Image (cartoon, rainbow over all chains, first blue to last red; front, top):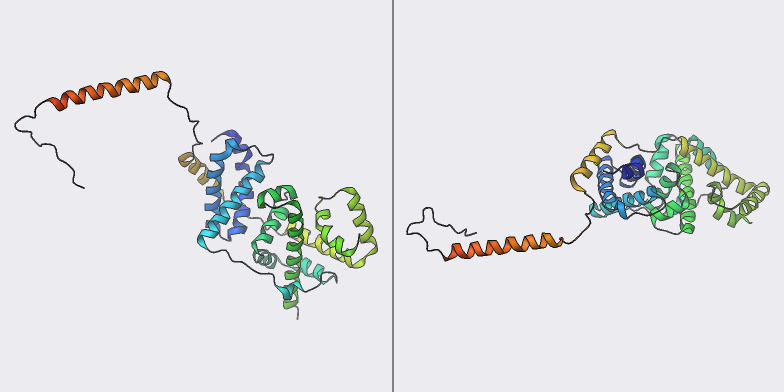
Amino acid sequence: MTARFEREVLRHLDAAYNLARWLTGENAAAEDAVQEACLRAFRFFDGQRGESPKAWFMTIVRNTCLDGLKASRSAHHEEYDDEIHGATLHDGHDVAAVRDSDARSLHACIAGLPREYREVIVLRELEELAYKEIGAIVGVPLGTVMSRLARARDLLQRRLLAQHRRRAP
Amino acid sequence: MNCARLSQVLDAWLDGELDATTGAEIELHLRGCAACARLRDGRTALAERLRTGALAYPAPAHLRTRVERAIAANAAPAPTRRGPTWWQAAAALGAASALGVAAGYWIGQPLPESFPGGPRIATW
């Protein structure tokens, strides 16, 4: 293994596993996907001339995960919930709901997001990637990254609010 | 800047992805619009909650070793393909000719009367 591969790719192993874990929903599947992604990355590393090795590697990780999900047919697709989506975010109730949410319910709300929203939340909020990098990884233009993140956060807030209301006496 | 436009650009602004001019328009709107200011507060609270929620899964300790072993075992980078040099080609040709001559000589020899263990032809 070359020192350059180690320095530019393997140092992002935590980020790779985090994305894979959120996409696959399972420890074993995430480990398998990361290993396969590393093998693919190593094979094609010499031809890689992008400006962000992390974005390049994360693209491979994402594609490997999606291949695995397609193969296992375990991808669950969740439609937008109109009832939740209808709630307003301008009255300030969601702010309290977000602040009061415990780690478990927050985790459950993210895990329950449709995949296209979940992945942008993970890439932006947990991996702190720039929109340009997210666009490269997900394969969409900047405008789509922008609107997808806004909808993802909207949906997350609405679900936390709905949970908060269910818990309230 | 109106409320509809603000809801489209608020996230990108909070993420530091917009230019200063648009940022100034957003700030001006937020100062005069309580509803949009609440929307901003919700986003700020969410960002804070996500940041402190310990939501990232760190890679398990054994994964790195597993990956390094897999790479060492399976993934030699594709070698540069080059044809044989002229002397390698000549040597191969020479070896093939010598083999041909030897085989021809051997085939031309009569078989002995008894050929212990005689040649067996696989029948699969």
